[in-house]
Image (cartoon, rainbow, N blue to C red; front, top):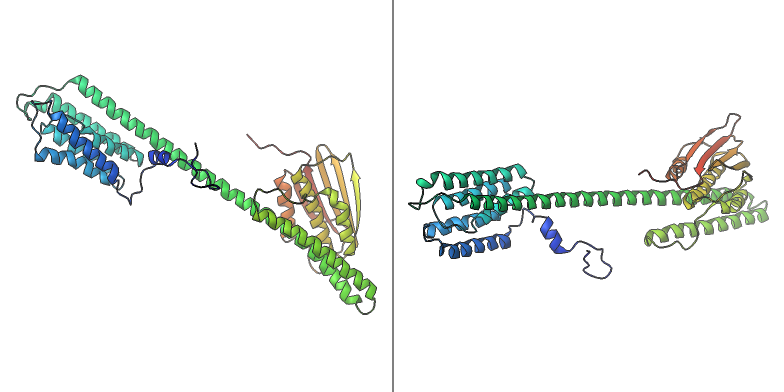
Length: 404
């Protein structure tokens, strides 16, 4: 059963279930429950005394002992072990003084149960054992020297019944403790899973933004350089470069807006389909506008990829071509797709040489490997033996199943 405080709120446990399974914080004294125990012990013992004329009549000292246990219960979550033994001592002192039997055991049971709930199980059971031993001693041996005079031995049947009730109460406390610890473990597991999902989502968005912006900015940078160089000598070519810049920036803004929309409204369906291999011709056209001719080749029978693998394949090729535009003097790149054995093999080659820095570093290759690993694939990248640079990837054609 879930509990809602207002429309749109997250569902949570009903308050009475939390009260049953979780003790109050140590900073707050449990006045209400302790007062209830005090009332039950005083009133119950008063009425029980009317039917026990052979016991010592309740007086101020007896009522003080009856009140001592409930008052000690106020400290049961701050000092649980002390409370368990102190309430037990108050009960034994009351019974040793010969006062009437009644609900005097309630405070000791509550004190020991609180010790169990707070994790002091050994102290709780020890205190209950002390109480039981004291009852046997006073009821079957020391009664000869204790008030009231002429008392007879206690009933073994009554002692067994009291022991059964006490054991049942502590067993119930043990069950509540186990349930509370289980709920706490589940809460921590949910919090950890939520943090992990948030981290994964943050990394996913970072990869998306990196791939979108890196590719588009590379195209814009190259075309801006071309436009500046040809602005005076070849205005028509400069105009073409500016047109390319406008188209690349518009496309980049659209993809960034899609990522940000998904971030603002988690769980909502995307307004546009995620990029995939079907956009490979458009990607080749963008690279061509940046001065890189892309040759594509497909081997084997093309098979549909899972959405995650399809997006990963597109982004890996996009990042490889972006790195060629940014870091290589090559004017031609070759993209090969090979469908075989339940996997898609991707290879992107350029002839180099490197221009203005090294290839193979930065966040782009890290993002490639993360994308491939997320859908059960692998990526390798490095210089080719004959010169240039090569990126290879292997992605499954089916969604990998999670381990049981």
